[in-house]
Length: 119
Image 1 (cartoon, rainbow, N blue to C red):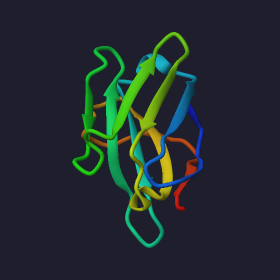
Image 2 (image 1 turned 90 degrees about the vertical axis):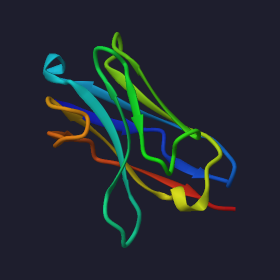
Image 3 (image 1 turned 180 degrees about the vertical axis):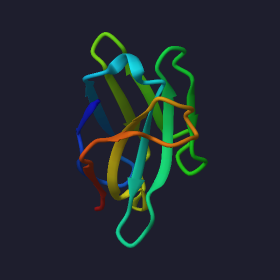
């Protein structure tokens, strides 16, 4: 499985940004797709995930109500819509895929895309 993120950039506090993650390869093996982020000097953290078949979503408390994950199975693409962005959302965002449960180990990772929230 290959994953390619896009859509990062610089946005002002309160603004919005949408990230995309295009998957290719053994798509049939994917059970869920997840978004993670890593800020400078901090550990990577879970942002949210979506299951491939049912489309059920799960979110970290820090982004619940502000971020939304959606999928387009026809395009093998997952999206992360980020609204009401805060400076503390600044990080490199990664998408990942798993053959297991959404809360388990993720097998494949994208290269990451930088999101900077600053005025």
